[in-house]
Image (tube, one colour):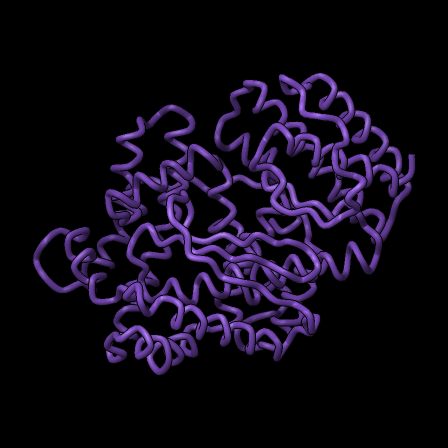
Length: 407
């Protein structure tokens, strides 16, 4: 079996599993004839899927023994994707993995553990920034109310943020002239934003409006879902790997796989790539706050608070780990999110729904960001060297490494 044939059989396997797992295939832009021709069976064909996955892994191992250069890269990447495919099939068949074991198998990484004292120290710093004498949570709720984007101004604010992210990305990365995406405002979702990449340089980006949207989410979602985040990542993979090199394994994006840690981590890092801290403050103060009808004089104050809250994101991992491992009840996990991640109660319930649907996927956002940033900065791509920083970032998007290689 050749590497080319292994790649094709792998894509077909992913698409077949997608018949039984509606969340598994996030994007596909390969040959239509590779889509499953047979109808979905009454039950998941577990033994057949595991057998074929194992056969591909064995064939891949034989090739990898004599591979080098880019071929070795492909073998290593495909091997990790097959491990994730095997684990997802076993999970759907009832295997109960621990949170950490599941994240290692699916996403090739394990998030660090933090105790309550770690988050209490961060909360103490947050409390000192917030006016008033109420609890930290109550003070933050009151503080946030001054920074909600009015519904009727949402599109104008997001459009401006998207345009700025695109302008700054184009200064460093050449994008296909035909690329585009559309924005839809939706409700009833367990996430705040989602990029649906359709292939041929086109994405549909959805923004969830179930809850009030704070001003910082405009830049976050515009850059994370659009430029230079998911939209650019998918385009560069399609352009450089699928169309350019003929590596068809990258024509399908299985959501529960190591590729997602790179995708989410690079998308979150893309926010600070496009708008470094001081430049973001200036852009929000001069452009976004006025568009939203908010007081631009409070931009610095708001970003100082948000910086600390970013450090609390790992509290979400602990809530997910405890809930999915059975050491926290649903109510206790929600309380943890309210206490240590500063979620409003209704948002905490929404986040629990995300845990139930996407499970250990939650590590990809914060751990992914930390791993991508560390990988780029240890090779000299620091804030003080923006040209190299963008060069290394584009290389990572164009030839995504396995998460394990970033550690």
